[in-house]
Image 1 (cartoon, rainbow, N blue to C red):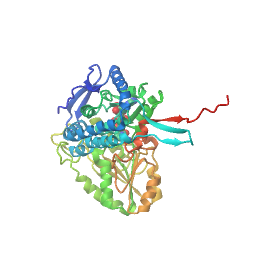
Image 2 (cartoon, protein in one colour):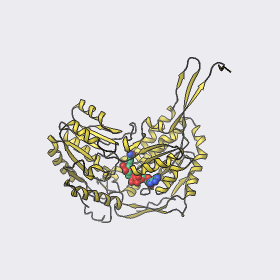
Image 3 (spheres, rainbow, N blue to C red):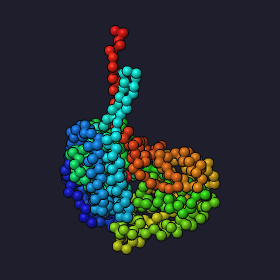
Image 4 (cartoon, helix red, strand yellow):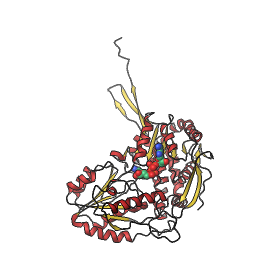
Length: 487
Ligand code: NAD
C-alpha cells in the first residue's frame, strides 16, 4: 500500500524534509500494512514554517477579497477533479470505506473552499454615524493562524480551518494528526497548483509536541484544534501564555431523543448514521439514544436487524459500508468500553466483538455494537468511546429525557425525532448543545455553524460565523471638525 509522499512537510510552497524528526508511520488500518514513513517536525522545521507564513501574510491580506476567493475556488475545483485519488489515499490512511471518503472528505473540503471563496469578497466592517463625526470598522486578518487536526476527517478538518482563515487574509499552518499525515500534503499541492502564494498554507507533521510548539509560538495569532477535551485543555493553557485566539472543536457524548410519535425507521436510520458512520469515529455522534418506552422494544428489534445487515469488508470496495477503526490501539480502547458495558449490566443486543475478516486478519476491525437497557451511570453512557458503540436508554416523559440528556459535561450535538412540531422546537431549545437536528442526525453542511458548548468547545466552524473567528475588528474614529479641548 504505497502512498509515500515526496517529503514530510510542505513549507513555502515546496516539500521539505528533515530526517532528524521522530518517525511517523501511516498504516493502512484494514491490513496493518505500511502506507508511508514520514518525520515529525523538528523545532527548526516549525520555525521555518512560521517564518515563511509571516513573510507571506501581509501581501496576501492586502489583496482584494475576490482575488483571494478566486484561488480558493480554483483549489476546490482541483480537489473535485482529484477526488478519486484523494479518497483512495484518505481510505488508506484512515481505513474508512471508500463509499464514504468519495463523498464526505475531499468533497466536503471542496465545499468549504467554495463557500469561503465566495464569501471572501463580502467580508466587511460597518459604518456608525455619530452626527457629523463617524466611526467605521475594519475586519482585519489576525496574522499567522495554526490548525491542529484529529484523525477522523483529515482533509476535511484541514480545509474547514484553512478556507475561512485564508479567505480572511491570514496565513495558515496545519499540523495533521500523527495517525493520518497524508492528505493535508495533497491539499497543500492543490493550493499551490491553484496559484496560492508560497508561505500562505503550510503543513508540518508531528506528534503532540509539535502541536504544543504551534500553540505557544509567539508569532502565531490563533490556534484552532480539533481533538479531545484533555488535549483542548492543554492547547488552551499553551495559548493563554501569549493571549491567542482559539477555536476548540472537542469531544462529545451527544444525545438523540426518540419520542413515541417519531417515524421509527427514520429515527433508527438517524441513530445508526449517528453511531456507525466512519466506524463510529465522529465527534458529534449521538451515542446516547434515549427512546420513549412505548416504542422501545420495536426500536430495538428493527435496529438489531438493520445493524446486522451492515456490510464490513474491503474498504476499497465501493459496496463496503464500514471499514476498520483507525488503529489497533483505538480498537482495543473501544473493546475495553464494550467489556465495561457488559460488566456494568448493559444488555448486548448485537456486535460486541471482533469480526472474522478473511484477508484482513491484521486489521483494526470491530463489529457495530448496540447496548440496550443502559443506565445513565454506566461508563458507556458517560465517556466518549469514539467507536461504533450505541447505547440505548429508555425514558418515560419529555422532562425526564431532557434532564438526562443534559446531564453531561459535553455539549457538542443533540437530536430529536418526533412528529410533534411544537415539541421538536421546544426540546431543541432546551438541549445544551451547539449543533442540533430535528428528525435527522449528523448533517453538517458548510452553510451551518458547527461547534460545541460546555466542555465540547469554543467558537464555531463553517457558515458566516467562522469569519468572526479568523478576523479582528479595528474601529476607526473619524473627526469632521476641530478638536474641542478645554486646555
Ligand atoms: P487528540 O486530542 O488525541 O489529538 C488531536 C490533535 O492534537 C492531534 O493532532 C495531536 O497530535 C494533537 N495534540 C496532542 N497533544 C497535544 C498538545 N499537548 N498540544 C497540542 N496538540 C496536541 O484527538 P484524536 O484522538 O486525534 O481525535 C479524537 C478526538 O477528537 C475525539 O475526542 C473527538 O470527539 C474529537 N473530534 C472533535 C471534532 C469536532 O469538530 N468537535 C471533530 C473530530 C474529532
